[in-house]
Amino acid sequence: MITTIEPGLFTTIQDQGRWGFQAYGMPISGAMDRYASQVANLLVGNRPDAAVLEMTGTGGTFKFDEKQMVAVCGGDMQGLLNHMPVPNWSVFIVPRRGILRFDAAVSGYRTYLAVRGGFEVPVVLGSRSTCTPVKIGGHEGRVLRQGDVLHVGQDMECETRLGNLADGYIPQYASQVQLRVILGPQDTMFGSAALDAFFGSSYKVTKQSDRTGYRLKGPKIKHLGSADIISEAVWLGAIQVPVHGMPFIMTADHQTTRGYAKLGSVIRGDLPKLVQTKPGDCIRFLRSTEEEAIEVLQKEQESYRNIKQEWEMK
Image 1 (cartoon, rainbow, N blue to C red):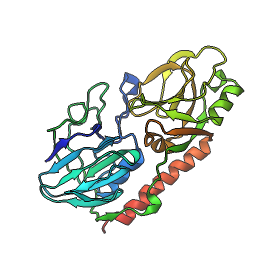
Image 2: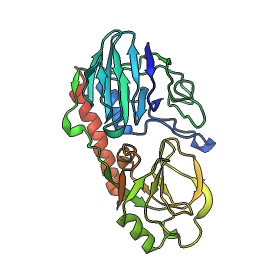
Image 3: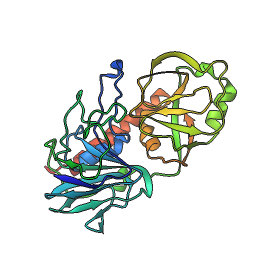
Image 4: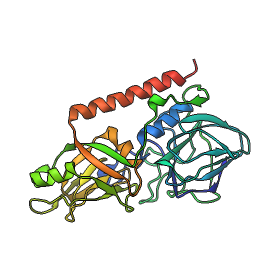
């Protein structure tokens, strides 16, 4: 068992998401940073869909009743194991009765803690992910609280080893990021001046950004006419522009339908960069293509294969 001593700012159990139910109004949920969460599972030899802890902004403190192999990936929350620093993007052993403590993120914004075997919570609609807006999944459908007890599962896939991930696989988090965007499907509702403002300006992440979506502030993006459309399906990375002209980017717990014009979409391979930004950070947008987006995803999948090959003990 793992006992929550301090829960942190917003800590939930997540996996790869609850796919196949958006037609019924159910968000996908899942880890905000797909790359960091999946690498954490790879490092401890888990299956890709094993449940992990996602900590946001400030991490928690956890007491381990038994010896466990764990990995920490994503934002640097200054992890301490029994008061000794532990490196980020690494896999190590927490001894029996060990205490693992995290603080405020000094780079990035979301940190993932994977334990060998994953976290054992009920599967709801095919996923263990927490969706706090509808209060399902994870640990009682909510963020962790002081005193919550977590159990370790059996979702391991292969034997693994201890150590630090090679630098070439570790993303660098910054306070200014560039996100690639594919235009559409309602980009024709904006004139050339609006598109020039969008791609030529810097937008700041606001405090209203969360697992539902990232609200940005910057130069207004003006519609040629109305900002409203007939409500239709939305997706991860979709960029809505409501009547006030400020972009809103859909993230893991987004609603499944919306009625605002969508200027474009952040490519899937760049979403980890988006969700590691914090309030006050700045974002600039670059035009992209479907071909580039596919190439980025292919490189990501290649990284997973390489990490597994390098880490798996034969």
